[in-house]
Length: 286
Length: 289
Image (cartoon, rainbow over all chains, first blue to last red; front, side, top):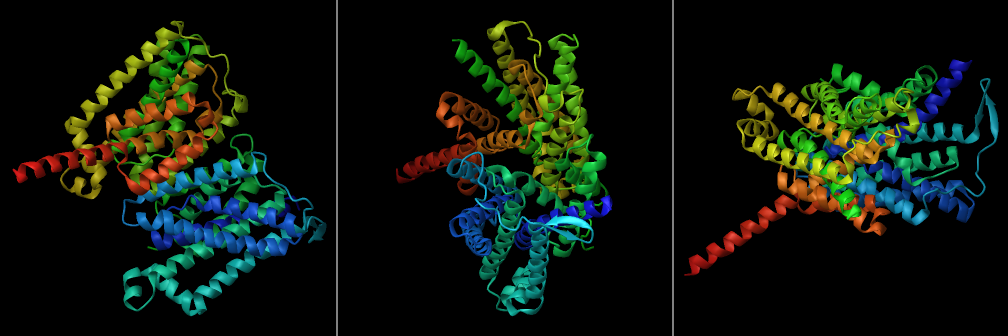
């Protein structure tokens, strides 16, 4: 029973990781940029969710608004910071992204204070019994949201015309362009959807912890990088599996490895071992 | 005077840290986002040594040796993975370091190590010692850059496949770069620990790695003078202008973005560009004659 509970907690955490990491891996797949500032957008999503819920009283509205606002800011970030750096050496964009992320954290701290914000009346906190274990409604909601968004994304990329154009661009940008795909539009779309999913993750984490802090993005940002590497950079399915695996490994590892390693370094220990054995990640093609 | 002395000591230690990363990132082109971990290894090693009675001067080689050893182990990862993957691996090293140290009672856990013994040279003596080491390291860096090894590092940084085709043993040069860089990082750590007299895992976290990285990148990767200038300026600013200290990270972050967007070669790139323009405009005058 105890193990089952750990597994469920791991899946909840893993679902959150997946929402963050998929946006990151999409950006890497398309532009070969490690988008560290993605976690800044995730934190921004959390802030938007709390501010809008407290102002309007509806978490559903807050979640929707937060996803749209952050999605648009994601496109702005691409336009200002990444587009001019696309033809430079890869670590140039990486360092710019780290700089942007640190600056974002500091801006959150300066505007909203170092101690973070909380919901004035946190919604979805009632406990329900599910298969013999106690879960809060918001934990169930975050799993459902993660499944819904990821399933929606995979249907979208598989069946819609834009989705197909997107996949074509990821596989071969020049060929896609010569077949009439508007590559620039695809990039904006990519950032919009990726940032939107990060905002969803941020909103759910804000709800789960009833807290957003300026530094809430720091650990997920680096952990999400570890996850997308494990998943084979740019590979969405691999990223999904890696997210869930890390979520569960952490839930179980905290219990059994807790006195050697702290929770947040488990993902990296796992990552370093895997990279040494398989330098292209667990699920790379070829 | 007291204040200027402690200021110069801090600047000196920052310069040593930045120059050590410059050997790995600037000379050999291997990105390392976990440099503070090596500074931390040096700080912890030397503090434990001096606390158990080893003289300060003898603890320095000890700190350098252990840092260097761990650096070589991490360096091996640069043989397996490249570019983006290496960036993430070294970032992982930084998190592993703080994660492991936090949980070790021997190393003081979350509380860190306090009451690190004073080397006993007074504040002025310590400053002179640090500045002396900075000068030695700067000369060594300049020498290294112009030696045959520096040119080989250049080749590896530029294009390692081509370098290996023309007969450069890429693997061993990467390891040498990591060994040198991390050894001096250990030195910086030992100096830091005996200056502040208190260390904890947070002093060597990811943010510190990024601080050192900003110094190298803003100065211009590979340029010894650029890195020294940037390290001095970036470490003095928050101390001089106390009101900036609160916004230190905001300033660093914004500077990193701006430098990458407008001059990826950093300060040294800007200087070279200005020089080039000056020469061009002079030539322009001659042509007019």
